[in-house]
Image (tube, rainbow, N blue to C red):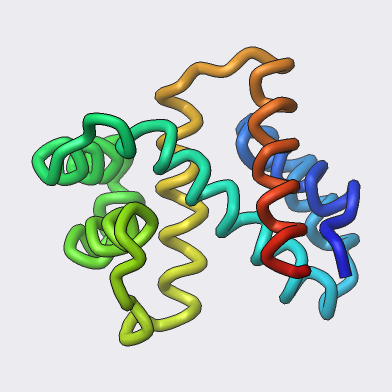
Length: 145
């Protein structure tokens, strides 16, 4: 089943920091479809954002610095982000490292918070965010195949 417009709209609201709209849209998603489509869209967006930020000339030090920076953006983020797991997740997006030992729920949370940090740092325009989400959706649809 391909990614739906509602799933993209929910992720757009999340990445735009419109949390009330995000909660409303996410609550309206079909639970079964959200488990596959939305989760795949979130992962694809994360991979796309990591690729944009680190693939060309990012170093391990850049990844460590980014994770540390995101953790300092709020006390809650500092408490919720395991730096080692976050660094491994970013590394896996770049190298296909096996991260099956990481808890699926923890990976989902890390995808979301790290993606939000990556997108915030890019300071995308509305059109830029739409283009980014279109690329992520295309990748997610390929993965859902």
